[in-house]
Length: 99
Image (tube, rainbow, N blue to C red; front, side, top):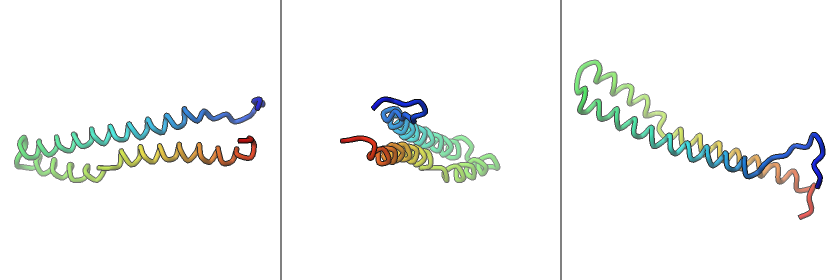
């Protein structure tokens, strides 16, 4: 089918590739965040073992831990959205093409 000016052209491979990249980056960020939390644990357990700085480090780590899992979840969600976009467009276009 010839492209007509104004047609919406979506590169499926690009969109799906971006989704995978988001997912991969989410996993990488999650690993880096785990390392960050371990570093905070190490600081609190061996570097600053008492006092107000220790208490602040423990409190900060506790609050930061609430983000655990979020980076991976966001990457997965972005990947799912990309896949859903392609599936929705394919379904809508199904009437236009003989398969």
